[in-house]
Length: 155
Length: 155
Figure 1 (tube, rainbow over the protein chains, first blue to last red):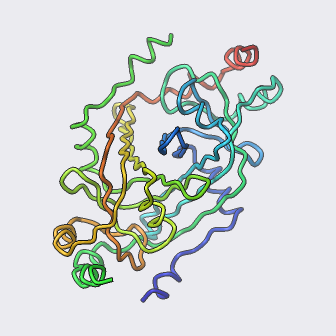
Figure 2 (figure 1 turned 180 degrees about the vertical axis):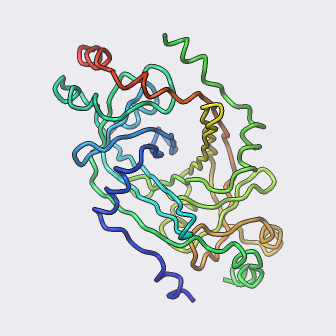
């Protein structure tokens, strides 16, 4: 059974991941703040192999700009095929400082999901881009998991 | 302008957060793996003030079960009011081991978003539950940010 299900998970090519990233605009950013993870929804844009988002001052910006890597995830679900997908970009984030770089990015379709001053432009430089597509399990398969519960309890 | 916008962000009460958590079923879990964050979409259920999800062996399980806190985020958007919301649960995760505890959880509406063996039941014990609701910015407000770009460049 393991192989049967596992074979249904499709690793996405890097180019397929970027196609999904370009088509999307809302993701969730995971950052490490002091001693715990934080997650924020945000609006991003793809810019020449990097991701750009806008941020106000604060925890999100400070955490993203530390040396600690960040991860941005987008996902979606295609009801017609009952397939879901998830793409994760990992990398480091840096504030866009140079005027020319700023001028190049201000025309990106970026708008904060949340209103308010978002004066900083942040760029994520990806080091790893991964994605997978998988059929969503039929809930009925899993609603009577007594046998599995028993198995787990005796592991 | 700062205050005008900031006043539109509504912090949600803990009970409002739980109501949204109970109404939802898909979230993204941020975990810390070695030296970087990971994010996974997953299906969860609320169970007596905790969150339960199913997991196969592997990175996700191992990371969630370390002493490092995890964060689970859900969000949504109400087009009619143009308001988005985001709820984050932070806490530690533990594998559900006892048979009685397992028997209590197998009837939860839990099914893995992705098919495959998901023999372990994981419980997140929340330490912090926060949420906010905010109007989504009109993209037109942000599509001509040249003045802001100039301001940022001279900070």
